[in-house]
Length: 264
Image 1 (cartoon, rainbow, N blue to C red):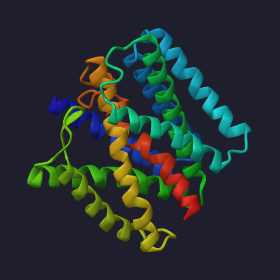
Image 2: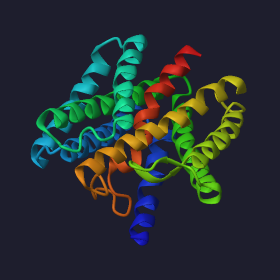
Image 3: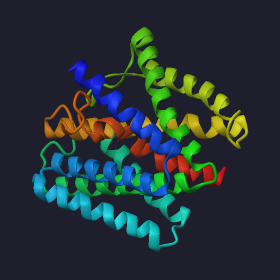
């Protein structure tokens, strides 16, 4: 497992970074399209849609997303409210985590639709972020933000972790891990402000809440998998599970990152 994990990271990590840093818009659209299709496929499959139909839906939704981005003038306020609706419902689901275990038709439909919409909004936000001035660097800063938060949470949780964050959803997470992640991200934000066109105070005001809210994406994915009685969202990324396993935090974080950059 560790060998597979290392090989996958060595193959895909540099490719992702190369596309973000050096790639043009078309390469980035391809990257986002692959992530969206795979993540949507996995999420629908988790919610009991048969694999062929889940894949077809993933492809169709991705194509529609690219069409929306290319043909429509996207109102940041409109997708802010869509983001709020989706993730407020996700928070309520996490608070009432007993809901959904029965996997009735209506429960599966609600979970499937909300997850697909969250992934769609993630894709639109990533493309818009990449399209900003210095967009490749803003996009890279978001990827690094999530990785820094993960590192801070892991080190702090392992060293100081005593108080469980959500024992019924993800038993390994602790409040100490969350706090450690915020502290390290605050330091990261100050460093980033030296290289991008943003005041350090604004960078901290944006990036710390992003890192905090990325935990919600992680927990939502964990609860979805727990209710489906599976460990990983798929085996598409050997040693790492699936695309949702790797991008769950980013799915929650990317729209908020783009929205806050536009408002602050």
